[in-house]
Length: 264
Image (cartoon, rainbow, N blue to C red; front, side, top):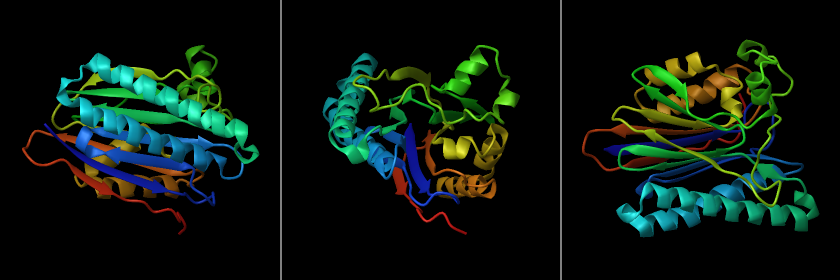
């Protein structure tokens, strides 16, 4: 199975700076997305620190371990890498007053031979499109999700909640963080979407599925998703990673793309 990668970021229509960050290492099947938070430019610093650290450290480990690494080995490497990145961000936030209180969400994908190891912290999400059905693979670490789980809100009511952006877990805000990791089967034809809440808060799942099914070209699909989020108000930064599994024999591909002005 071969993999096709594409990433996109956009500032959106409201904010002046982009606190979302993405990083890809296609040769080892690695994709990382982070949505930063904090005053001044601290959120941008946190998300960039996280994606850069994971791409460098976990990417190098995956390259060296190769196919000899078991799934258990990869899970452990993901945990260690995120823990080390968390400490680096936490220490920076506590030694530089400009970065006080900064943190970031994370969604991290490691593609194996026929499976996907998916780790996340916070409310950035991962979805899978298979045979026209879009399924959310991650469950938000957020106050809103806890209220839904407790029966205090229905998913329909949650759309209008004022608590959308209150995460209960983030990288860099405490000296330790728990990475939630799950493994998923990967089949030819599957499309994996990683995104920040700048997309998921603006565009409902049905519309996301329709866009992905309407565009066979990954750059066009990503652009259409960014446009859809901006058409709905573009209230936050937008970050997207698309990965498609193919059964055809061809090299892994990667098209980096970033548009950061977000103005129309």
